[in-house]
Structures are given as structure tokens and as C-alpha cells.
Length: 518
Ligand code: CA
Image (tube, rainbow, N blue to C red; front, side, top):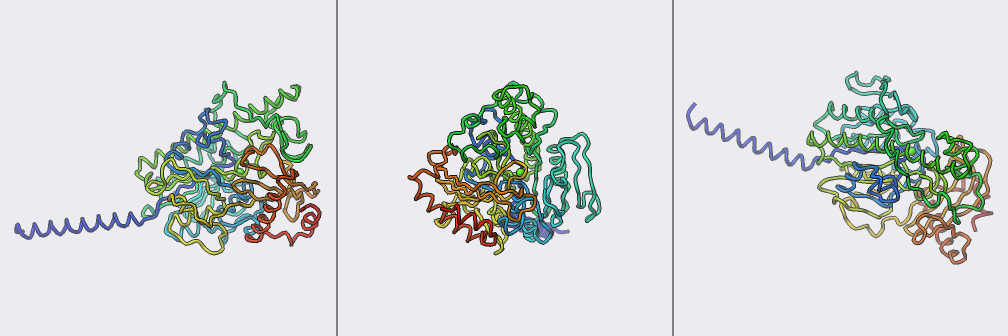
């Protein structure tokens, strides 16, 4: 080989290398991000340090706080029905409950309705769901799944698995994790999938879903003493009800103390029945909060393991990370536990997005978004089209830091259907704007499976959130709010008409409306 041919060959190799690396860089620029969607079950926003509030000093969530510090925190993200299955179905379809049909726990979501994972996969992603699923059918559309059946167990969880890891594709089997807490097992499974991905040329879309901190709260043993010597701060409304809710209201909502004889947190926490009412309530609250926050910390520590893996594998900065929970939770406010209510602590979802290069670190967004918007947003993050049948709107422009568009929704709709079942909450619907919340407790089971047949007395609540963010003063009957109430009712009906949630199909409801609307 002459010097000249050798040099020429070297030059051509160099040229090819340069072109190839240029192409790779260009391809990388075009490549949409990995999407890690982390969702817990019943983790209220006010149980996250970054959201402030009375628990922030306990430092309950250092890792989630890191996501907020490096990303965007939404302060007005809401669910449209604060209960597990409906929220999950809404997130996977971009539709309201009366459209996807999951007003409560049925009919689930068959393959043909698993729109979000199908469309993301068609956009060129490798897809997986790990952890809680809580929809009746298998998550068939995903490339890989490993999910808890139903609610699943906190300890020794079993999973339904399908995927090439390392078993033949398309066989469904059951895998058990002995002596492991579900948050640890779900994270082990997520990490194993990330490590052994079959299609590493593609970006990933991973739904990483915890069971925690859903009740009954069971933490991993290593958290048994966490917060043991701390006094969990009480909300004033644990004791002082003000003018919240309807007068009397003896039978509504599972309570902390003895108010609800049928079901209260003292029962759940095995509080000594010989204690006087006040002490019973105080002890029940302390036990409740400690158990809840031990489960929360278990989630937070596990998320840290995944961030650590992404960092070490070089994927962290090309991954968009979403942190949310399927809805909020009452942590003793108004002497309530659980969700279901349209009250702030229950309908608000935590929503944090870390996405380097797109989302401004440490930013917040106060625009009103809801979980119907999640699927459209995730699709546009993946550079995919949003189909017409989705009812939400992508908030990608807000993530990019663009100002809220003039025509962005100024209100969100809410409806709880499962009348008086489990936690004695009457069926209701309403509207929340930036300033007000109007709720109509129509109190009927309608055609919802498992709803309690007996109607409850209809009533209205109106809160002025500008002066009363904790909803202590129902101003519905205050004459100075009559005009506000009338306008909100009009807005509510417009909103119902726009999304197609019409009352006309329910004669009983129309009858209640005729008697109680004005
Ligand atoms: Ca839930």
C-alpha cells in the first residue's frame, strides 16, 4: 500500500466517521425523549415537601422535591373523579368517565380502548407498565407488563406478567415476590426492564405505578420507626368544622374520630375504644399520618433508585419524568379520610415534570389542567398526533414555558358517581374555577353499579377560594354570592354540554334538578 492510498483510505474512514456521528447527533436531536411516568396511589399534593403545607417540615419526599426543583410543578392540576379506576381510565384514554364508561370500577379498559400506550407505541416507543393497573382487562397493548391483580398486596405481592423477560412473548404468567414490600418489588421490576430492554434503539415509555400509599397503609419494615417521635401536625379543621358542608351531616364521609360510627380511622388503626372522644380522635390521627407517611417515604426512596440508575446509564437527561398520583387524599381535613370528595385535598393531583432542555428548572404553572389532558400531553411529548376522540388538551406549550393561551380553560369539571358506597360520600358534580368552587350534591345512585340505592337529601356548596382556600365557609345561601352562584351554574351547564355529560338521560336526576336547582 502506498503512502497516498493509505492516506486516502484514512481520510475516507474519517469522513465516514464524521458523517455518521453527525447523523447520530441529528437523529438524537430528533429522537423524542424517553418518558418515565411515575404514578402513586392516593398521594396527596400536600403530602409532598415541594407543595408546602403543614407537613413540609417533616421532609417527607426529598426525591420528589428534587424533581420539582429540577422541573415544573403544577399548582392547579385536578382529577375529574377522585377514585382509582376512573382516574386511570381517564389518563389512558383522554376521556371523561361517561365516555370511557368507568364511572366506578367497571367496565375496565379492553385492548381497543388502551389508546395512550397504543398511540405511543405507534410513535416508535418501547412500552411497559409495571405495578398497579386496576382495570379489569390485561394491559395487552404494552410490549411488556408486570402488574398487580386488582389492588394487589403490600407484602409478598404477586404480579401478572407478559413479555419477553426472559419468558416467551405473549405468555401470561404469575410471578410472586416473597418477603418483599410492593414498592421495592415494583421498582426492582422497573429497573430490570430498563436494563434488559429489547428495543434499545427506541425511546422508552414506562408507566411506573406504585400501590402505595393506598390504604390499608403498610410500610416496609425499615420504616417502622420513622416519625415515631414526631408529632404529626393537625389541620384546624380536624376539630373546628366552621360552616363547611351541610348542616349536621352526621352520616357523610369516613371520619378520623367517632363522628361516623360505621366507619372511622380509629377502627382502621385499632385505637383503644375506651378512650374519650377527643383522645380517640387524636390517637387515630397520629397513627394514620405516621403509617401514611411511612408508605410515602418508601415510594420516595425507590424513585431515588430509578433516578440513580438513569443517571449512571446516561439516560437521565434525555428522559422526561412525570410525577403524579391518581388523585389526592383527605389527611384529616374536615375530619375526613379517603378521597371521592370534590374538596381541594382530594381533587388536586400532584403534578411535576422534569424534562431537561424543555422545562425550566424550579418553575411552577398555575394554569388549570386535569387528568383528561394527560394523554394528549404525553402524546405530544412523544411527537405523536392527538386523535379527535380525546377530550383533553395538551399542555405541552405550558411545559415549554409559553404563556397560558387566551383560550385556555378557566374552569374544570368534577363528578363523583359512586353514591354512598364504601366511605359514605353522596354523588355530586361541580365546577372549579380559579376563584370559586360550586358543588351540587344530587345524591342519587343512577345507573352506577355498586352505588347505594337509597337517595340522600340534595344540597349545594359554594366556596370562595380567594378568601377561603381551606373551604371552611359554605357561602351558597349568602345573598351576596347569589349572582356568583347563578353564573357558576350557567358555566357548569355549558361545561357539561361541551363534554357531553348530559343529565337528560336520567329522569330521577332531572326531577331533583327541577326541585333543587334554584
Ligand atoms: Ca387512588
